[in-house]
Amino acid sequence: LNIPSIVVTLGTLTIYRGATFVISGGAWVNADQMSPDFINFQRAAFLGLPVLSWIALLVIALFFLVMTRTQIGRSIHAIGVNPTASVYAGIDVGRTKFIVFCISGMIGGLAGYLWISRYVIASVEVANGYELNIIAACVIGGISIAGGIGSVGGAVLGALFLGIISNALPVINISPFWQMAISGSAIILAVVLNARGERRQGRIILRKAEAA
Image (cartoon, rainbow, N blue to C red; front, side, top):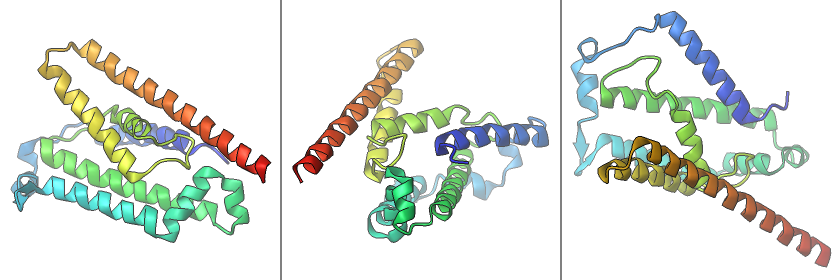
């Protein structure tokens, strides 16, 4: 159907969230309904670092290698830049997108599991709205919503930047309104800078083509 991936993602998110609410009846799962092993999992540590930190580092390293050292990673970048050209290059665009969606779903499930283990509560409303924070972190990290531009490292830096803002501003008694305003301004600035960078890169490519 050639629908933008981000539109499909947000649309299906709403559908699944609504279906989950209907199936569960909006019920909450509290700590007394969870096993002790599940609750204590996130408290474990290895070499001085929490298990959650090791899992995050492992996921980052794994996807860095996938995106920079494998054929599927190069195919993902190519499809993001130009899906039509990718077809002519022999890349199975549909299959690659399907794999990406499956991997995204798996990582989302892992994140949900770790979130519930950390905060010991589960409901349909948990982490509601965090999808926008994730998009913001990616944009701040230099990832283009249109695709084809960005890196795993950029996404990590964007997430760290938003995390620093969300944790530092309350410490200096900044009101919630101004916290959202500052975060929103940072996102808008990142989008503008990304757009200018893409236009500049396009002009450079055009000049090289004309010179050739």
